[in-house]
Amino acid sequence: MRQITFREALREAMQEEMRLDERVFLMGEEVAEYNGAYKVSQGMLDEFGEKRVIDTPIAELGFTAIAVGAAQNGLRPIVEFMTWNFAVLALDQILNTASKMLAMSGGQVGCPIVFRGANGSAGQLGAQHSTSFESMYANIPGLKVISVSNPYDAKGLLKSAIRDENPVVFMESELMYGDKGEVPEGEYLIPIGKSHIAREGSDVTIVSFNKMMKVALGAAEELAKENISAEVIDLRTIRPLDWFTILESVKKTNRLVIVEEQWPFASISSEICFRIQKEGFDYLDAPIRRITSADAPMHYAPNLVSAYLPDINRTVKLVKEVLYMVK
Image 1 (cartoon, helix red, strand yellow):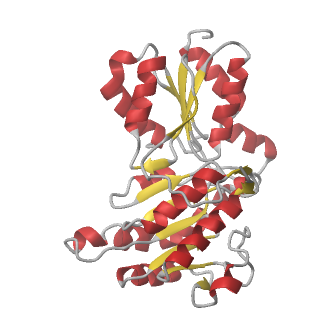
Image 2 (image 1 turned 135 degrees about the vertical axis):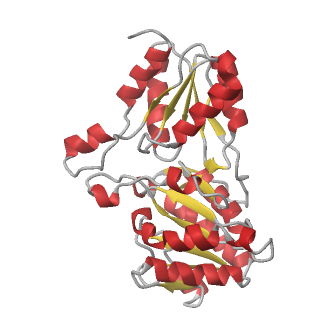
């Protein structure tokens, strides 16, 4: 099977859907003339023209409002934010209009729209460009939230998101746009709301998503050297969350560790911990443990960046703690 980059997988998803449905269009900062801030939309202006690949001013609230209005009137916009850190300026439209319109209109007015872009830390970018937003948007009823870790999932889930009748928040990572992975040449869709067992195991379940999957899988590799078998689950969709796959894994391994790039308070791991202890308490042989970003703003210094983010060594140590191998 061919290997393509993460950005190419996203581009193919948008191109295929735009060829299939003339209502689909892309708008955002630098998506047209510059071919995308991260070159995700490279060549799309040439193929689809300026009416369907639209450069916007650096005015997130304004162009998001235009896109939401277009979605309410029969079109299917894809809105690219240069970073989700900038999208907080558009939160009024995402929270108060897109997510609520179907309910407020009694089911008469929908909002089929995809909001996508880079999320989380990308190294030395400082506090205002390094926040991970999955838990914030997952807390909003009416939104679906997707956070992908590889090119295959990126293409299949973005196509599903574009076809969905609901507003979808689609989280990527600046650090993964150049990652390569196997992607079929033919069309395929991945259902929203279904996680993926990225590695099977029997001793402990590790749950993660987005670029923290690299930490989870790296930890599993290190643990395997010590004959510790870790099952690794990639959530892929944050809301709706695939509780069943996590629970079935915990029934098998009896231990759960969660790795996420969120602040710890009111995080995705908080919700998983609650749900699994509620529905799977009798299967747990150790308390659920998690590793998150530090409960502080990200700093610029390289040593503080490393201290802030989850890593393989700390994840391995946490797994050994739930296995009662270390105190």
